Image 1 (cartoon, one colour):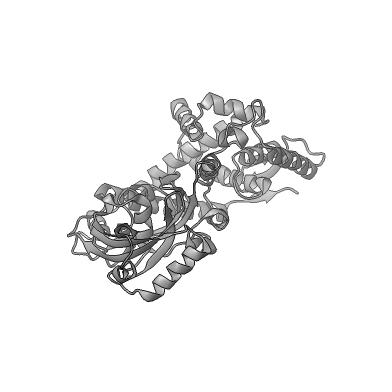
Image 2: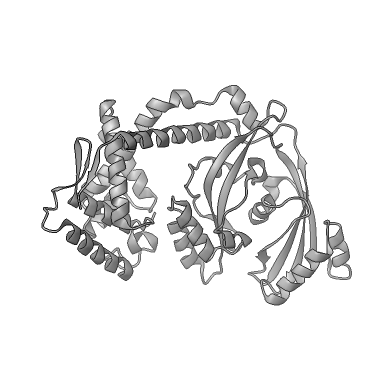
Length: 420
């Protein structure tokens, strides 16, 4: 999360928002004031069944979203979110659920901690930019109560059975599995750009919309998928490096991993979808790959040489002929357990089929291009991702699906009137 400059880089003292954000805030205030006209700030702007939303609440939530650098037009997003929160609050109220002060305090602390701030520091930062502390508290309180309501209502029918977990793990002889649909954003880092790229990565990690993440990937990602907004194809969970699987399984669709450090790069992944499949994918015991090192980094000359090599070889064994007469260290052929492979190489290999090539990586501070080729994968016998991780991922996926469907039903059944 970022809150203007304070949460992104802790730059100017006594002011949180950058000049651009400050200008946007001024325009936002003028826009909302103009729309409200002569209306009192506390008069109803939207009616949601028996509840109302004031112009003041819309202004406050829009300011809050702007400071968090949430995607979209702040006022439009504020209206949308506040309508949803009223619908959720009505359902929560009818169920007799109310968050305790301790639960709210914990929620405030956890939210502020994403910016490495205490709840008091975060609240003070908001106050300096004209956001009422009650806006932050209401936002957290609504989230805490809705989570409790959703779990109470949908948890019993969302729990996967042992048979379903077995299918996802392939424990019933490989009849089922789990696959994920991800988007990636991998940004090169040098000592000179480390601070800038880290700040950008922390901001992007807060995105929850697919289009917003893809826009960032198109701008900043260094991988071949940038031309497709970072979108990757469906991938068996078992293709991913073991260290990455719990991070992916812990995401809800739309959420982004925390920044992941790689050699000379920072990576982020957004979960677009997760599915159980009828055909199980075996756990990988070892990955056989070859790395051929080409001087020149990502220069035109080096990339042209990589393209020529790709045209000449069909298998990893062909690379021995390419490297003949060169120093032994230009070709590295390995067969390693996934956990023993460098994380950046493991991530690239996860995207490849046997005989396919990647030229996304570099070494020697960007001076050497890595021509990476997948030679093959050796399957283990029924050793897969943690049973608990898979069960939790299936559970969260189903709860989220039930909750989204229920919210749409509440919206369809509601009387919602928006004033001009």
